[in-house]
Length: 164
Image (cartoon, rainbow, N blue to C red; front, side, top):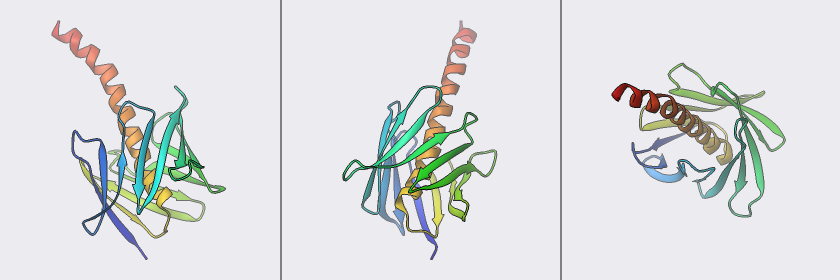
């Protein structure tokens, strides 16, 4: 049975609110500029801890007992990621150049599909796996934050040079 969730995030807010039929069922706290985040979906809580500098990876833990659940490895072009979870490999990638649509899949096929506009989005899936659903949203947020850091690093100094 297909499940549809919607999420919202205010422009200057750090929390993604996840809804099922207008009922809050989860959240993802992005913790901007830190190496950790946490989220919850349908009562299941997760901690995301990013390690490394140039070749970063994120470890995902169960918040209840702090057990390691999975690992996310990112590609250099910020368009794909690999998720190792429960002795399986899943892949995350954008579906379009605007980065407004992405998916999570494995060798068995599509697992989760995501779409977004500026401050809201939609999640569609058939499986009952809170870990995969929230991890796909986390990866998108990770790439969004990384893009903002790169843009600020490049354009802030350039803007200062132009103004002076």
